[in-house]
Image 1 (cartoon, one colour):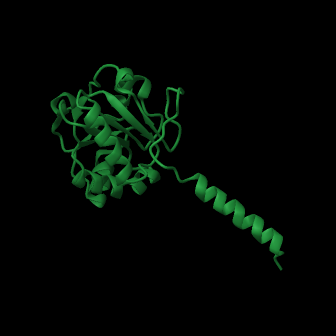
Image 2: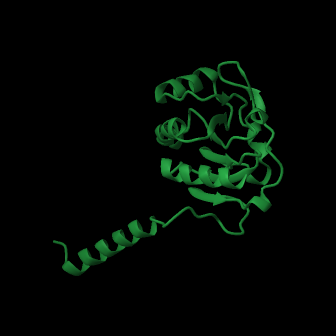
Image 3: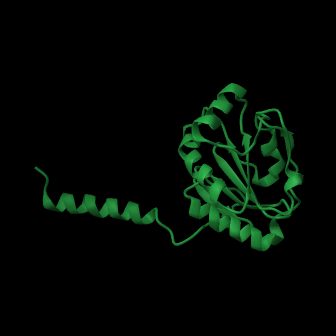
Length: 186
């Protein structure tokens, strides 16, 4: 039998945890200079550094060069077919790629078989290209390089890192806010 006082404590803890997970907007990690797991970090325009230079071959064998997208906001998602959280966020990225005014690109974060990666894209209806490089493209982000999959960088119109999501993209709305901010700043 559950005592009423114990039940009240449980309800209070659960409500506290739920409310702690809700925030009024996009937040970063302050002065940490890295994104923590499941964190959204925005980078002020004066701190963005040089444009990111990434090029390679897509999973389908086509050339991909980030420089071709200067003037556009780019959402660059680092993922792997072996990554369960990547599977969780794939429907959000698919929807966002169809609804937002940004170029979407994928990049493998770790060596992955091309067949498994193509099957992943087909399963989730991903139509934007993924650079098949096994993760070396992540190093081009310098101090903003992702530590794990999934991670998503939003690049401003100059090709500089404007935001980094470490972990699963929380929602299309989160990406929409970051894309709009990057488009206005860069």
